[in-house]
Image 1 (tube, rainbow, N blue to C red):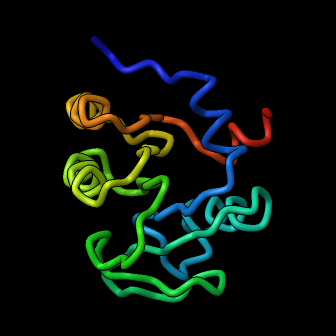
Image 2 (image 1 turned 45 degrees about the vertical axis):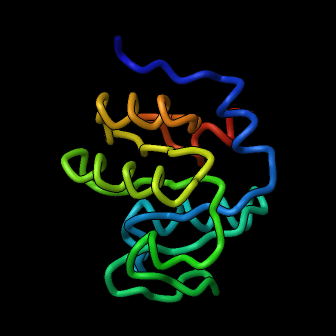
Image 3 (image 1 turned 90 degrees about the vertical axis):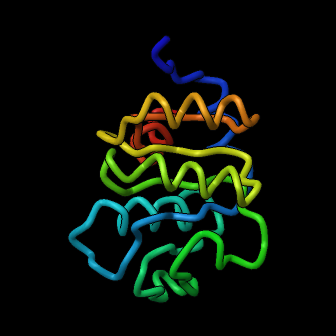
Length: 136
């Protein structure tokens, strides 16, 4: 059965202060992740944790090369990678004890979404928190 986003989950994730690991976030201002992370941090008051192989500091937040390198738990793992790589990120989020995974607009992996839901994580897929947040 295909995943369907629950509007109540979207509302709760975007209105409850939390720590969001943004996978794929770099200092490249031309990438969607850069602007969305800024919106999460400055528009919604979320704490962001950049996750990128180069581990850059972005928007004043220290980065990590891998989700497993983050020392403290995260509430939401925001997935800005290609759909073919999303499953591995979701598996890392499950292993890290995240509370939710948010697969960005255009990022779809039904099997990964099902694994996350089965592990008890909230799942939002093929949606953008900046777009959804502005709708609220």
